[in-house]
Length: 542
Image 1: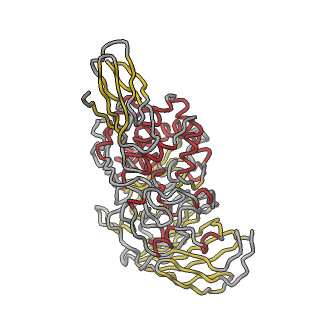
Image 2 (image 1 turned 90 degrees about the horizontal axis):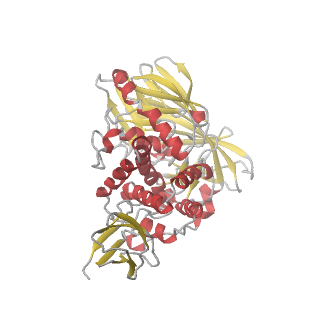
Image 3 (image 1 turned 90 degrees about the vertical axis):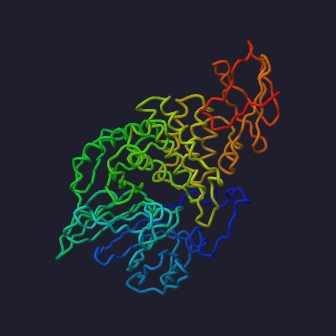
């Protein structure tokens, strides 16, 4: 699904002082190369057989695509040590030229503009083992407590091409989804994305056929294998009745039935704030895995050990983080921000992580109140490092700082204060998921949408918070009935208003880089900046 390429091409690159050297492989992985740009991905038919004892896989991926302009070389990505054994079109094996992890397929059939074609990719090998899933991803080959295989994939950062051949760039998603057939030893269950269509019993194996009908990002396609049992429920959502399925290890069934009661509560809160669940046709699933969890579309993976908080800890230090299971709420929040709205380049991954971090506080808001939500998101600031900007470098598969999570959430919480109208703020969040429904977008598009719908020129706001590490500081002085104030540590023309709490009362002030004075009706005994604004403040001497 190729959308919005022009805004991507002309993106603002950002702060050069944080630049680093990139390789040819980085460019091949992270840019829309000529060998990618000419064809529009329509569908994947991915068939894979997993051999747990050997820790190997083999399979085929039939890629359906539409020709946008004539070309005869197609780039397909597959990372070593996996092998792209052959590519076949119209029963004819094609020549493949490889440059590292990028493989260039020479097509012999005339590729006519507007026409649809298929190419089948054959692959096999021993995929990279995840070193620290899900962050340093690959295959997790584990065993459950009964010694049975417990296997899962996770590959957001490293890329889906770590184990299967595909067009491994975020800008293009298969318009018509994916068919996923997973063959495993017959004693095991294989869970994929979307809905289960059927199972085939073979001699000593079983094939599980899953189908996704919506567009899906490559990294969201996953396979999970184990001694699973299933339970399910129906949820009456905004759009229609939603099937919610849960696949867990057999001995964790009762724990899961209790802990996963939070899933409908999540759905209720997020449909309120963000709009209808984006993938009703493909259902919603939670799938237990041997790592912490990931936002795989319609197949959200879970490994939080059936505890509230983040593995039993409150990341915010506010106490509110222990009122919900972090992985259920955070990873499911990605169904709206990451899976519905997907970054067109990983440099803009803050769209995924900032909004989803913010979704945690909105869950708290919905169920426990606005003040609780404020305490939660403000508490997360203690983990912000401001080491580098949260927008990365474009065209080279380079993410921004991990501050994109907590800083991103606090940026959005600050924006809510500036909008100063919760009804409008909710309309903006829901509008994003409607305007960019099932699309890949740039940060610039999101920034401009929020600016337009809020009626606020946010140009300097976005550049300050997304593209620098500077946190605005309000310096202020008290002189009788006068409050003097200014900003330091800001970019040119940054002039965000904030609320000052003066003698216990809230008052809007409008700092700039120059000192300003606001006179009050009585002597100022105390003054501070409201905590909901992500700024620093300091009282200075007269």
